[in-house]
Image (tube, rainbow, N blue to C red):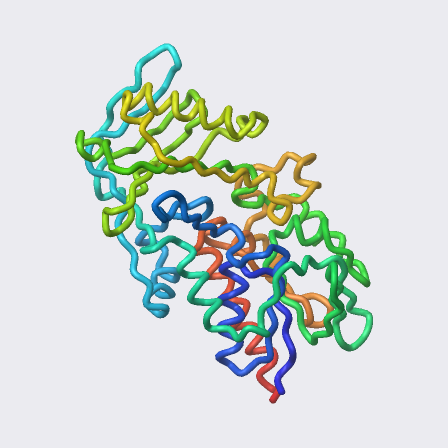
Length: 357
C-alpha cells in the first residue's frame, strides 16, 4: 500500500487533492471540522429552491485550470448577466448614477451553484474516505507515523496535508515538535480570503430589474451594499440579487441588516425591491473555521503573504504539506488559486512517494 494520507479540510483544494491522490492509488482520508463539505464554497437553497451563493461565486476566462476542472467533471457554466443599466452610488447626498458596463467584462458562474463542484468531488470518494465534525486540535510528528488528534478521535497517518487557511492552521492547532518560527510568523500574518466578508442575497419571484432593462448591478460607497449583481439561474426560472455588504454592518442584528439593505434597494430600484420572498446572509468573520482568533487582533491587508514561498516547503521530513488558495503564488483567494494549489500539492506528493507501492 502507498502511504496513508490525511487531508485536513473538505474545501475545493482538499477534495481535489483527495480525488487526484485516490486516482493515483493512495490511501486517503479527508477530515473536515464543519458538518458539511465546501469550506468557503457555500450554495444555499432559498425560497423556491433558488440557489444563492454565500461564498465563492465568479470566475473568468483567465482561470484556465478551474475551467479545465469543470470540463473534466462535466459541470456547466454560464455568463454572469450584465445587460442593461447598472448603478453607482458615490455619495449619500446624491442620487444613484446610472452607468453602463461593457458586456465583455462579464464573468461566469456555475450551473446549479458553485457547490456543484464540491458535490461531484465528494461523490468521487467512498463514504469512509471523508469524515465531518472532526476539528483537529493536535498534530504529533515525533514518531514515525503522524498522530492527528481531533475533538473526538485519534488518527494515525504517514502524511498530513493541510488545506486550512494558514493563519487558522498555526493559531488553532498544537504541533509537536513545534513548527518553525518563520512559518508561524508568516502564516499568522497571511490574509484569509472571505474572512471579513458579508454576503447577502434577496430572492424574488420575478426579475423586475430585467423587465426594466436594468442589469441588477450596483456599486456603492454608501449604505450596507458595496456591490450587488443579478443572481438569476441558468434557466432564468429562479431570481435573486446577491453580493457583498460592508463588513462594518456585522455589528448589527440580522433584522437590522436586512432592513437597511432593502431600504437601499428601494432607493435604487423603487417599490419593486420590497416584493422579495426571502433574505439570506453569511457573516464569514463569525465562522470559527474560517477566521482565527489571532486575526481578529492583527491587521492583515488583502493579499498579505498569499503565495509566500514558505508554504511551498514540506515539513517534518516530507510528512506535512501546506495547501489552499492562500498558498498559491497566482490567483490566491480565487477558486483558480485553490485548483492550482491542489494540482501542485498532489503532483509533489505523487513525485516524492513514487517509490512507495
